[in-house]
Amino acid sequence: MYRKLVLDNGVRVVTERMPTLKSVTVGVWVNTGSRDEQPSQAGYSHFIEHMLFKGTSSRSSAEISREIDALGGEMNAFTSRETTTYYVKVLDQQVDRALELLSDLFHHSRFAPKEIEKEKQVVLEEIRMVQDDPEDLVQELHMGQVLKRHPLGRSILGREQTISGLRRRDLLDYIETYYDPGQTVISIAGNFEQAKLDRLVARYFGKGSSAKAVPANGRRPPEMYGGVVLKKKRLEQVHLCLGLKGVEAGHQDRYALYALNSILGGSVSSRLFQEVREKRGLVYSIYSFLSGYSDGGMITIYAATRPKEVDRVVDLVCRQIRQVGVKGIERKELERAKVQMKGSLMLSLESSHSRMSKLAKDELTYGRHTSLDDMLANIDRVSVEQVAKVARQYFKLDSLAITGLGPLAPNSLQAHG
Image (tube, rainbow, N blue to C red; front, side, top):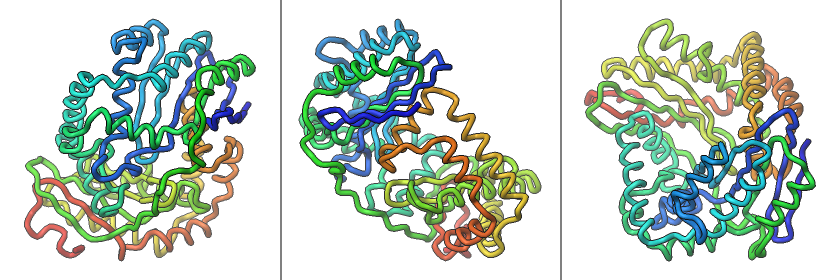
């Protein structure tokens, strides 16, 4: 049972009651992420997310940790390129305490200078961890290559110099600018009593007033760039990303593109997995995925292989992209992809946490709720003809971007440059 409520201060509250569950997940979503930062603020959204767990005016960070453990729940946060999310998952009888705790963190975090200095070291370690993980690193390099100087192309974690140099005042100014009630969505899914929940949410999140109209961010759509970028690094394998232009999160072609992605590299029965790994044994890992933002998107293929097989792997991937783009797909492939998409969608929405995420994303992307039945009907409606049309439009090699990381031979990928 879905409901939407707008509090007096402009905070949107979206809820879905799931009476068969024993849990409730509460999420606070702020419509700001790494793309909203200036270059000198790179990493602020993510750093603020860390700082909200470091003590409030009434709780120390140790007390916050002890309290969530005492609730038998899970509390965490994550930052994306467009949103920052704080959430807590608890047993249904603990929802009052969970809301109070989240509200305290969200409204009364202290940002103590000593804690900021300590957390800088933690975040710098997190940045170094990406440098040590070639799969993460090549995808980050790829985003920067495809999007050039656009804010979406920057790392969510920021750069070492912006993190080392940030001050308490910088973080508070950033919150003042972007953490506006009109940019905030409270999303709750699980087993609860609606009238009681409405009262609690109003008590804990209904204060203050919205200073700005929604949306306040001055986002500009990204442009995509092709070409080849190679970065040498001492590794055992070469890690590759190949990128094509995709669609924004709410685009009418997105279901056809989901199906295409599933067929190309989204599963173990996909063309890339079967052709490159199963038939030829050239990779251990190969997959494709879609990234959809509010005003643009990408299709990315990742693979890791031995240095001498780099050109062969890239040729095989390009051959599959070309084949799908020119010839489309077979009906039985589409039917298999649809069954897989519907299965993974239904299984993914069995938990209160995933429902909470879906509610918030629907509200932020479309401003309305999309039911599971609507989504299943949209998958069913995808036709072979529509997929062929979308494939012709997006599976074009002339705008292909290739990023390689690892022990690359001097003449690697020259044919694609």
